Length: 292
Length: 267
Ligand SMILES: Nc1ncnc2c1ncn2[C@@H]1O[C@H](COP(=O)(O)OP(=O)(O)OP(=O)(O)O)[C@@H](O)[C@H]1O
Ligand SMILES: [Mg+2]
Image 1 (tube, chains in turn brown, orange):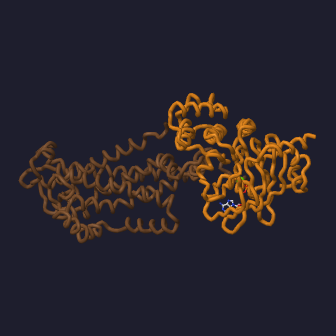
Image 2 (tube, helix red, strand yellow):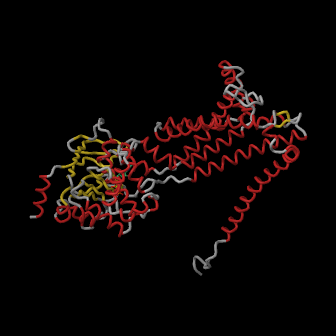
Image 3 (cartoon, rainbow over the protein chains, first blue to last red):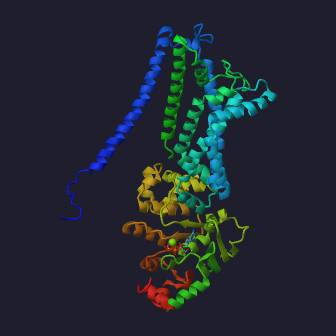
């Protein structure tokens, strides 16, 4: 009788069981995504078959009850408000993460981290409420009516800032300190090290943060619904009220029937396609290697 | 005969660096105290001693890498060519271009081989492509890496072997044409063959660079060192026990402790 009596070289039973359980979970997640997409397609199908894809782009307006289905102004609304928020939140979030990780005194970065965590935990309706009560009147003084693309961008910036800052910090903290030591020993300044070593090395992590933030911004409903004014129009200035695809669904779902209801599912599909394209682009970008 | 010759030589050549009653504190705890030691120009000085006696700490004072560790205090004096480098007016970044460091664990940047050398050069103002190419080629030849990597200069340095990585790190330091090179156990993470290659490379730097090397390998210290310094922990504080030419330390040590250590009786 030896201490280890398992002499055969087959993988252990518990490993195999775990492997199958994990495979099961992965499969389940995949199936759920497929099911949701299928459901959206199914619900959108009636109107797509009756009026066709093209009318969602070319119709003169969005009056679904009268049979006009142009979604473009709302697609623009969704894209512009998201783009604006990401453009503002990315440098803010990544910059503050760099500051906290590499420059700030420890007590300050600890405090700031708590603040960011708190920001991440505030429900979106509270952001919306604050925006409506404080931000919108302020913008209104600048240029009425106040509910606007700008208000939406500002609120969304605040909302996705924690996502971007926290993922950036997490990626920075994985950069080996040897790189810093090595660079310092070569007489290379801290900023040059961050710019040329840290940022390239953490590129894929930073992108993940941006994508998560973008996804959150494009999918956000309640807060933008409260501050954007919800007028269906393609904005010509950042002070114009807009309606996003998400707000459109939330506003009209309650009373929509027939083709109108079906058209709202088309809005949903459009959102999913937008996000899918985004993820694909991000994948492509983060795969590009950094050597050379 | 040979001994006196060496002492005479050392009296002739000026120290490139000189520490005077140098002490380093991590918080309240002293890592080493009162080290007074010359580092001669163009020579190889080997630092030996048991683990924890402050060799790495001493080395990191010499180009003020200690600035990067919070709560450290350096007391005493370090002169580089008669300039006091512990002075706050001395720019640590400029100092580290002149005094390079090689770490125990090879730490190439996650770039291509070419960019690993081009990055420090560019940061120190050399931007012309031909000049970069020329400097990089000569330096890689210097460390004996050129023939091995010339066909894959633009692939990741992280795929090199351990010994090649360490030679790349040495090249990365040499490309900035430092005066002093500090090496902290540069061979201890390498296999015997790579270790031999790196050791030969270090020996070949004699004369052109001032080298300070920490090593646990006494035979290596004896093979490549001109001078040796033995550090030891006394009352939990690192001390310089004995300094002299390698000849002196290994064949005629003044201290019993040195004799015991170099003969493998203690340590
Ligand atoms: N960053 C630090 N903070 C606090 N104490 C430190 C730090 N680095 C080193 N020490 C302490 O200082 C003393 C000297 O350490 P050092 O690393 O210089 O020794 P060493 O001679 O290089 O040892 P080894 O041969 O194992 O590398 C040790 O007691 C160590 O614990
Ligand atoms: Mg050490």
